[in-house]
Amino acid sequence: MREVRIRDTLSGAVQTLDPDHEVGIYACGPTVYSRIHIGNARPFVIFSLFARFLRSEGYKARLVINVTDINDKIYAAAARAGEGSAAFAAAMTAAYIHDTDRLGLGRPDAEPKATETIDGIVALIAELIAGGHAYESGGDVYFRVRSFPGYGKLSNRRPEDMDQGEEAGAAGLKEERLDFALWKATKEGEDTSWDSPWGPGRPAWHIECSVMAERELGASFAVHGGGSDLVFPHHENEIAQSESAGRPFAHVWMHNGMVDAAGEKMSKSEGNIFQLSEALDRYGREAVVAYLISGHYRQPLAFGGRQMEEAVARVERLRNFFRGQAGASSGGDPAEQQRGGSGGSPPESRFEAFREALADDFNTPRAMAEVFELVGEANRDEVPGAARAVAEMLDLVGLRSLAEDQGAADSEAEQLLQEREDARAAKDFSRADEIRDRLAALGWEVRDSADGPRLVRR
Image (cartoon, rainbow, N blue to C red):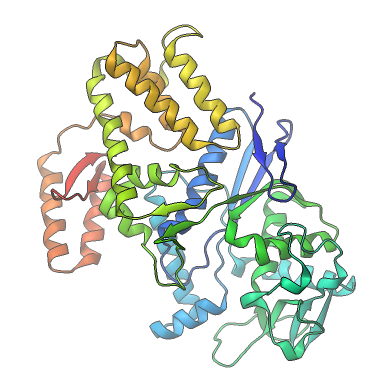
C-alpha cells in the first residue's frame, strides 16, 4: 500500500493518510437552484477520482457528496419559474444526477440531502444552544462566534475582516455582527417549513454539512473537500459548529481551485456559466474529464474554447495511439491482463511514476505527463506492454473508454444520430436528449465537433 499525501488547507502542511482506517471523504456538493456548470463538476470529478485511486491502492475509501436542496436561492429560482420550491429542487437534483452520470465516473457512496437531515440538524442546534454557543432570537437561531476561540483558523481571517455573506441573517436579531444563522424562521413567500423548538422554519446553509458529514462518516473522518470558495465562511463555520459540540471533525482539508471564465470565477450568480450538459454535448465526456484534471486540483483552472479544444486534441491523441497499437492489446481487455515487461521496463516505470504522482497531493498533471511520455515512446519505437499500461493508467483517471474499440456505428445508431440532429434543428431539445440517452444505452456517445456530430464507442 502506497503512502498517500495531501496538502492540508488548515495546517498548510502535507498530511499522510492513515492506511489502517477507513478514509472517509466528505465533499460539499451543489446547491440545486439551476443545472450545474462545468465549474461545479470539478470537485465531483476530483473527489470521485481521488476515491478511485485510494481504492486501487488498497485503502478503504468512502466518498460522500451532499446535495443542498433548501436555500434562499432555491426559493428565489422556484418563484421565478412559477413552481413550488420542493418540486423545483427535486427536478434540479435529478438534473444534477443525470448530468454527472454522463461523466461516467459512477456515483458517490452516499449523496445525502439537507431535506433528509432535518431531525439531526435540529438536534445539533439544540446542543449548541445548551452549550452556550448559540441563541434563539425572533424565531431564528444564531451561532455565537466569540464562543469559539479557534474561529478563523482555517481561513486565517481576523474577525473584523469577516463577512458572513448570505447566511448572515437579520442584523437586528443578532448579538454581534459576526454571528451567523443556524436556523431561519419561515418568511413570507417561502412555501416549505419544518417544525422546531424555535418555531416553524428551515436550516441555514452551514449546519447541514456538519450533520450530514457526521451521519455518514462519524464525528471524526479523514478528508473534508470542496471548492476553495467554501473555505470562508462555509467550512470555517462547519468547524466552529462541530468542534463547539465536541466533535473532532475532519483531519485534512482538501480544496480545489475555481474554474475561471475570462479571469473570473465561474458562478451562476455572476451569469458567466457554461453548463456541464452543454460541455458534454459539445466536447464529449472524455474531453471534459481530461480538461478538469489538466491542472493541479489546488490551482485555478482557466476555461474557454481554447482550453476545451486542447483537451479534445489530447483525447484524440490517445484514441489514435490505441488505434495504432491495436495489435499490442490483442487477446482481451488490456486492463485485465498482466502488464508487460520487467519492473524496470518503460511501461512499468512510467506506471509507477504515474501512481506516485497521484499519491503526491493528487498531482494529475504530472500523472498525465507520464501517460503522454509513454505514448510518445511507443509511437516512436515498439514498446511491449505499452498499450496495456496506458489503459491501466487511464482507468484511474476516468478515461478508460479511450482504450476501447472505436468501431463503426451500425445503421440503427446512425439513424438515431440523424433523428437527433433533426430534433436539434427543430429546437426540440428534450427529444434530442432522449435520443442521446437511447444512443448511450446502445453503447454510443455523440461527439459534436466543428465537422458535425459523430458517434464513438463509450
